[in-house]
Image 1 (cartoon, helix red, strand yellow):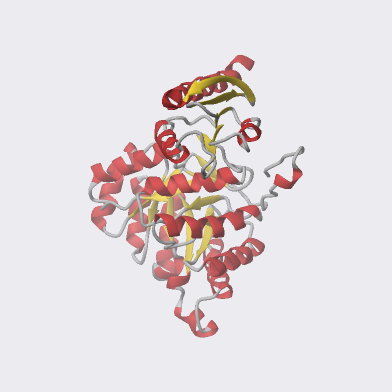
Image 2 (spheres, rainbow, N blue to C red):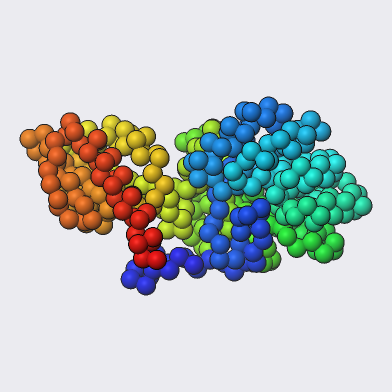
Length: 373
């Protein structure tokens, strides 16, 4: 639950789900909503895949998924897992042997569709391997790959078909007494995905992996994901998320965090509050914000920074941020610290100065819990 007794209109009551483990990351229950991404390198290129995993982890990814389409990729996974700073989910389709090999290679979770990996005996073999090696499982239902009998029954992909598919797959795992699973019901259509997720959330207490699949490029995919995932998260649905973009996985992680930060569900790094700028601006707001976003990427401490071009809204926004800068006249502006006007700073020196003030505040916030012990 996101609980704010002072501003109750910000509260989000999260759906109650049971908790599973993906490696050392708890998913569901009262655990923080985790952020995932997926590598897009050839898995057999171990160095490139590890580099991409490490970059994603540095950006804040809690879990990274890696595709395992063939035996060579499964062998590579054995080399990748020990180098990963975060748990690895092995993406498995069609061939049950890949699931077994991935579990043996150290994957923390297997993403499977139990309906497409063969006979019940083969499903049982994969589940036995997962159990033996401490793997959890994600049931991945996708509107683009629903079973033929469901398409025949419903006539087209739809939320009811996706929920039925998910429950069928849950039944397969439950029949084998396997409970360490989460589920996703993804679609590229925002309406279909949202309705399917609401349906599955009512039908099971399993942790839910949220995603709008194949959302598109960086801009369009971000918007679709923010609408779809944002509304579901606001309803309290979702225990782990992946933003699917045709872009660098690091961008997926950044967007995922921004969605969670905007709802007060996760906090990491500097939350920059900035105006779109207008003729009243006392400095170039857009270029300043672009520069600060890059210069402050290394800050992981949750904190807020306001960059406002003029005094119309600047002082008011600065009252609620850790560090602020409001444009004034004569080539300078006002620096705010902890919501209070502190000192003036020239526009040509303000970026360096703000970076210094943010780093100083981050160090102060990091030291506070230690001082309290």
